[in-house]
Image (tube, rainbow, N blue to C red):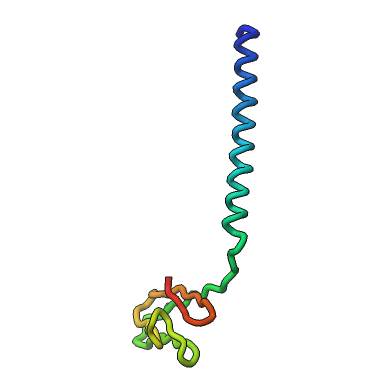
Length: 93
């Protein structure tokens, strides 16, 4: 390979490395800004694992609701719900 081609390849590799570092730095900054006001929350997973006719009833405290309902019933084996609270209501997702 000629020395000119070698220099071109080296310059291309250096430019690619710098572009990679700049992209990583930019994406890290975007992620930091996106997570700045994020809050950690607890997620509860409730799953019925037995095959019996018994049901699992999710009942929020007092007048709190779960997706607008006072209770949610799980009646089928392996059915599950992921629920999270915003401190005033519960949501299924």
